[in-house]
Amino acid sequence: MKEERKAMEITEIRVFIKEGPDKKLKAYATVTFDNAFVVRNIKVIQGASGLFIAMPSRKLKTQCPKCAFKNEVGSKFCNKCGHSLPPEHQQMVDTKAEHRDIAHPISKDFREYLQSKILEAFQQEAGKTGATRNFVNSDAHDE
Image 1 (spheres, rainbow, N blue to C red):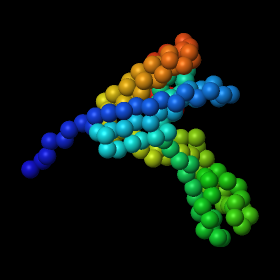
Image 2 (tube, one colour):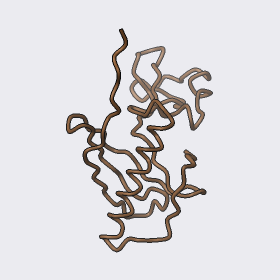
Image 3 (cartoon, helix red, strand yellow):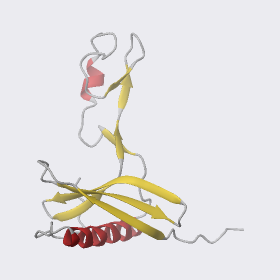
């Protein structure tokens, strides 16, 4: 017997406006689901087609064949022992493959719902802080 699943409810969104030299990164958001689960460091980014969100991610790492230290993908030398890393470690550099999401929506519908709620909260917070600019909302996700 299959259990009917209830969609997670967003119970709180906190937006932290980012000011500084990075013109694309506009804010960070922290989202609470069902008053029970928190996802931090969701980025609000200004892309060519407008604002979109980027889920929290981490840089991928690969092991040094000599000392087994984990180095960032694309490194030419081990950061621990200085050993030259094989070319395949360097060839793995592809901007999409360099980072991996820590948490992300499974369905397109939930991603769109999450993005719309975060961007709505961002616009409200930007209005409060006087940081309102001509942001263009977009469902396009151009990471």
